[in-house]
Length: 280
Image (cartoon, rainbow, N blue to C red; front, side, top):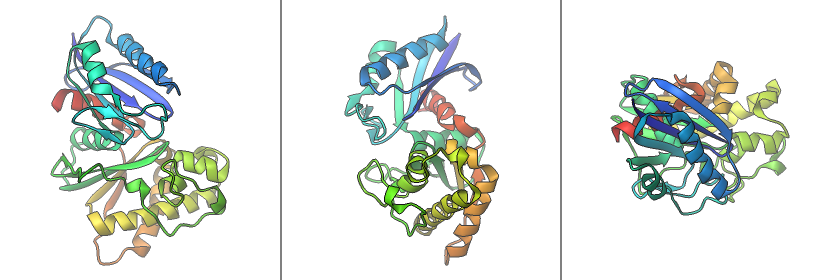
C-alpha cells in the first residue's frame, strides 16, 4: 500500500501518522519531544518506521516551529534550543528517498484546516495556541508569507495580568502576546497549566487574546479566524465567546471576523502535514 506521512514536530510532543491517498489516518504514534537534537532526529525516523509497516512512503510532510525556510527545509524551531540551522529536508530525503516538505506549523495547520475543512472564505486566518502561539494567513487558499513568515504571537498588546513580573517570551522580548497567552506563558504567569486556570484567570487570558485579535483584524481584516492547539481546545467555546466579546468591544472601522474552533482539534497540523506531503 502507498502512504503519506505527516509529522507534527512540536516543542513538547512529536506526533507521526500514516495516511492513505484520501487522507484517512491509518496508524499513529505520539512521544514527548526530546531535548537533544540527535535524540529528536532518531525519534522521528523511529516513529516513521512504526507507522509505515510494509507500505511504500510516497511523501512526507512536517509541521515544525519557526523560524524555518520552507524552500530549503532548514529549521531552527524557537522552542527546541538545540535545533539550530538543521537541514531537515536533506536529512529526510536522503533517508526515505521521497519528497519531504516542511513549513511553519501554523501555515501547515492553516492549509490542512482550509482544504480539508472545505472553507470558502477568501481571507482565512488560522491561529494555534499551544506551547507557543502563531498564525497562518491564507488568501484564496495560498499562504501569505511576506518577506518572512509573519509572527502574530510576537506583537505587543495593552495587556491585563495579575502577575506581570512573570511575563517572559522565549524570543527575548518581554511583552509579546505569546509570552502572555501561550501554554508556556500561562505556566510561567500563573504557575500551573491552562486546564487548571480559575474563571478569573481564563477571563484575563481571553481579554489578552482579544487585544491581539484587535491588532490582527485591524491590519489583515480576515473573514474568519480559526483556533487550534491545546490551549484553544482546552478553553473551548467558553474561551472563544469571551475572546469574541473583548474583540468586538474594542474593534472599530473594520468588520469583525467570525471566530471558530478547528475542525480537527489537536490534529490540525498533523493532517495538514499529510496534505502538504501529497499536494505540495
